[in-house]
Length: 550
Image (cartoon, rainbow, N blue to C red; front, side, top):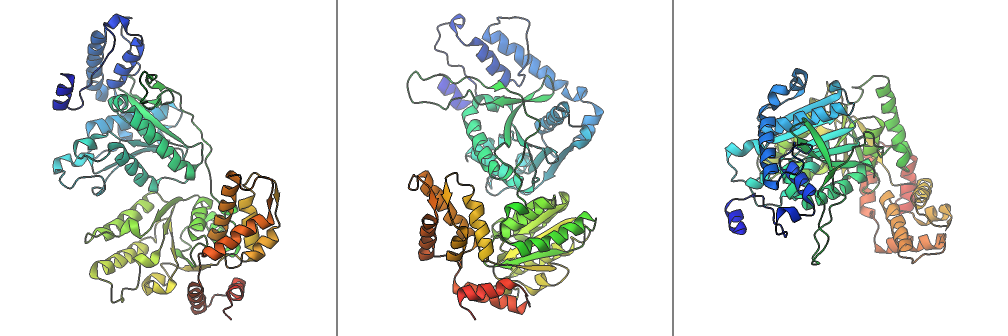
């Protein structure tokens, strides 16, 4: 009967109990806690110490209705003023208000708490095309409460399940990762706010979603970055952090231990973050020196001293890494996008994507906008294969670059093929500084090997000068790959006594035989571009010598 009712009425909550009567239930207090989470009153107390499950649930229902009906009346004017909304649902507004109140209770001043809501176009990956206009409030909102450089609060009501059959939690992860493109480089924690009844019935999936997000963001923000699942408390007007430490994934063993219900745990207020800076970018000394000049101008208050920067050079030499480090050194938000983030099969959508990205960069200024693979977006408009929409995309990019004059936004673009870029993008006033990025010379190769191998915990008898000499024609990414293969060999105990120079040379030779990142045609084309740009750099002679191109 329960299964038939559940199939007719989705989201029906049931309590399946193996006990003959209520008095014999061993974990009654945990059932109470589960009910409190379902009704979003996690700390609610009733006068009866040992109320029946039915009476307890009914009492919670009454309290929840009363708390929600009086919520707006109890909201202070200063909190109401901080809220921003457009076409959000009532639940969204309440959860944003709870986030503001909770951040304030942790010692963040109300003036330091930001609250944003922005309407955007439907996400093609997560929204079904047949969704009606009436459902737009669930698909067109980017909700964000934040404390700059410290906490970002993302609200997920999970109501998308009503509109589609896609995996609810994978969709939530994708939405969070998409929004994270505009987050600051220095961030301590992400609060993911989920309605209590969704947590109570989906804690396995939420635990896994939390693990996936922490794994993803730890690569950028550091291992101590926190993803905290938050549940609302309608009685106290705040968010309650929940822990999944005592939740075990389901076991197929009969009689396995039952998972315990989630329990609240305290949030830490400060988290040390990982920072990528110039000291962690080995090699590229001339390139870093040029960018340091721009940092000095910025420190003296000259914000509009440059229109943009164009990195051009061979693949695998560190253009993206250098741009990311420069953003951190300058204390700017880092935005990165590539052709995959812009190009669309729909006419006009590519231009809209560019407008949206530049609008976000201006909104988060001071910021740095990194355009990877510029040649795939801004190729020559006179190309016979370019159609009208592609030309319109390039024109939109030119317009956005022109409109950056009064904003504190620096644009850095990167390309492997300078000759393939439209001439209008390369002219002064748009991408002013054109910085060639060279493969590492012998001194830089020595430093790279020393940097990467120093991270491997094993006794080392390595001559780095010999490694640098044996690795001619290698890019930075090639050297990193060699060191990674050495590390894997140590972990597999293929090297278990001491790491020697000959061990590393073996992997250098393997990569040379298996194919390096560069080939002779690419190097010839790069040298020709440097000649056309009248580049004066001692690395040019080194590159010619290593590749025999005199």
